[in-house]
Length: 285
Image (tube, rainbow, N blue to C red; front, side, top):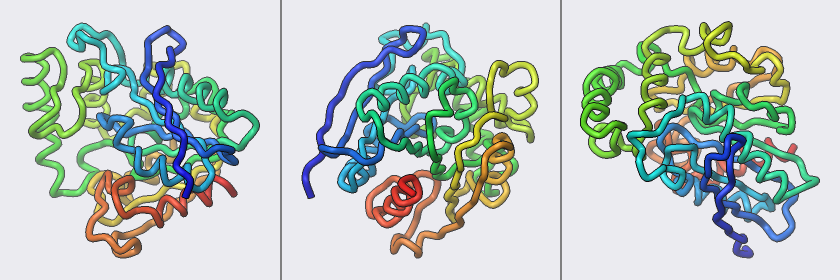
């Protein structure tokens, strides 16, 4: 397999905020793929999948949302932002950078976790031909697996607030395994996850403008039996925010791919090439 071309660069969002991006591409791509991360996952977490897709002939763009990893400002505690800015400002900028780098080919989007939640905030979402969602479901804590609920409550009511009080942001490490998380992202995420509607009830007022009703590109959503967050209840509930799109849920278990565990982020970890091929074939169809 020919090694893909890899290029790291900085791309400003519409408001000028500098975003760290990585292009991993075949020499002559036949498909462009945007990978939108889950909350707190840096772009490097998706390198293995990006390289595999590039080996199949794709140009793949990964990126860090504002406040995360390579897009983290020096003074994260002073950063002013909201969770939905990732969809309104960062995802659109990443998509435009991908289109510029791989013009004239079909565009697919892989949304991991929250990466599948924010498509309706993107003013340019119509440029995407197909969406592949991995472990995407609403964040309401009571709808998650019972074993995960105590940890979530500790995170929302104890660990997160204490970290904000001490650092001005949620510091990675311990209960929070992700990258340092800006206050604005944590506070909105917490508000949504503590209510059954998640953010659907806010679409009528607080979260305008948006175009969730206008998202028409087909969505295939992969969920995994041992994922405590995206499950048979939360995944279809999330898809309700895209009423204009044809949607499909594909239920899988770890043994389908010869691994012991997938969980909430195992879909993009080692030994999941068979899944990545499924995703590639769906996006290329």
